[in-house]
Amino acid sequence: MEFEIPSELRYAESHEWADDRSETVRVGISDFAQDELGDIVFVDLPSEGEGVGEGEEFGVLESIKAVSDIYTPVAGTIVATNEDVIDNPELVNEDPYGSGWLVEVEPEGELDHLLDASEYQEMI
Image (cartoon, rainbow, N blue to C red):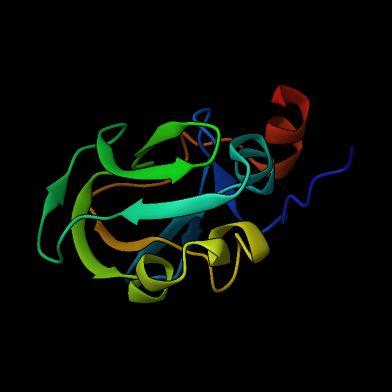
């Protein structure tokens, strides 16, 4: 099966993506990850202003198959959470790189340690 892997994003081995938006980094889960989870029925995200460390758990996705922790690909401060996915968890399945994003982080570091699209493709 072919999964969508946008080339402009960076990817963590735990299947989160990171979109560098100059001042902030938008984070979500990959198309592969949402497919593995199945229909997502509940999303738990942190509050704005919370600090997160790189690789730290920052939320939970619950699907009809499993409960899965989500990890932040970059250290920093949560500056936005996507309220839409809390009210409509299916957005994570329907549009993981668009309306299904999860949080925005004001980063404390670079994204160089993350995989590029081709490296992520090889990993999955």
